[in-house]
Amino acid sequence: MEEKFDLSEYMSSGIENIVKNIVKASLKNPKETAFVMKYMLASKEAQRKRTLLSNKGQDIPPFLISSITSRCNLFCKGCYARANKSCGENLDINQLSTERWGEIFRESGDLGVSFILLAGGEPLMRKDVMEEAAKVKEVIFPIFTNGTIIDNNYVKLFDSNRNLIPMISIEGNEEQTDKRRGKGTYNSIIKVMKTLKEKGILFGASITVTTENTEIVTSKTFFDELYRLGCKGIIFVEYVPVTEVTKELAPTDKERVILENNQEQLRKEYEDAIFLSFPGDEKYTGGCLAAGRGFFHISVNGGAEPCPFSPYSDTNIKDCTLLEALQSPLFKRLKETGMLLGEHAGGCLLFEKELQVKGLLDNCS
Image (cartoon, rainbow, N blue to C red; front, side, top):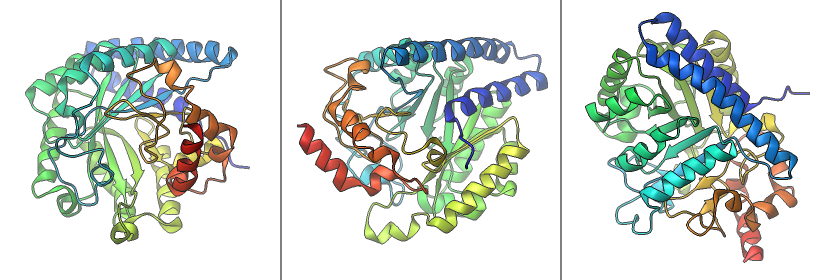
């Protein structure tokens, strides 16, 4: 029987270990010392809040994924967000306001949500929302950014608000990164990483895993280089095909085995770093974590969706509280049918069951 892997516990203890090691390495940085002490207390309090609500029959996920903008300054090849129209030009007419995002972040903290992943588009194109997130100190905000617009102003924001953690997208080496994200992108983000390291700012990397780069990006050699630049963790995200043409890039069982084995080795070797894979790590939780079971997704226009790769909604956060959104009819049906608890060998469970999710949505309306 496979040992259960607790994502929330791993991330909480992992961030504590990262910051503790940073403090040991640089006792001259009181900001990190203050951050780790406050975070440890906030993490325990968040768990207490979730437990209290769970005892009342309302489970609160430790994670929330928020797509805060549809705009992006890059045109990456095979971009899922652009393909499903959640990213692109002139799509942000009905986007959530700065004030509403601030309310959502505060509601999340009050409920015991520990981590809010900020995505897009390119999330740093909405500095107004970043500043709202910075105010909610009890929540950690990993920011999925391409890193190319991190300037001195953003460095100052990250330096002053240690709960904002940039997760910079990289596809592998220079050739692989520039091939997908555009010429010069690799050198641009390496320069940013060096700046963040000089300032002692915690950051990580997000990597889209494909059939072309799995062995390279999960290798010790690759992470050694990132680690030298100051990177303290990686979130591996399996590529989701946008068309039949790009289907060959989606990881197969072969790549998933490589990812899982190499990730386990990295976890053992680097105790002061975090390694997560999505949706791979879900297999240890007894099924898919979407629809509020472990997390859910809020789209740019406020739709409460099971996950970014299952963009269907019957409830909008503009019209209700975060707690009410978690009680959406679609989420309830997904849990009641047992669809989330199916055998999980890897890959995105709900993406593969798209027609069934659409059927449930029709029944909920």
